[in-house]
Length: 127
Image (cartoon, rainbow, N blue to C red; front, side, top):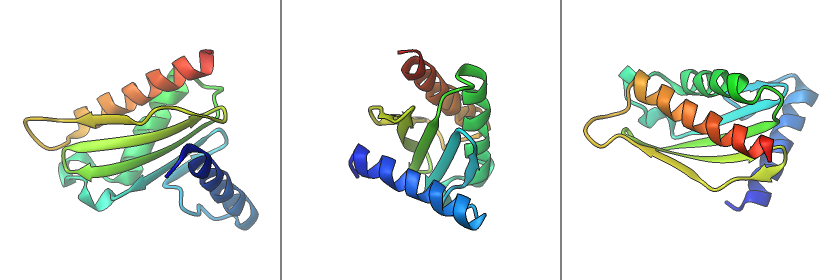
């Protein structure tokens, strides 16, 4: 999916959620932050679920760039690999990938992924 289409999809989802009061397709949404996880069923049980992943990303972004408008779509590629598409303040960033080589994802690796995303968001918000 291209960045323009991704951004339009995230904006449309936010509009639907606002209009209906529903969470629409977002796993976690609040004001400046929207998060969607695709393939969350592939997450290992010990790593947590889609909501836990979005919560970790939201917390990390809140510390690094509290005023940034962020939309993130995380794709769970395998139980040990994640990819994320980010839109920060209306600008698409390059796809971010994260993998654990010697085991499946776990809570610590999810936190490292969240921190990595937050660092990219902060860099983009500052420029």
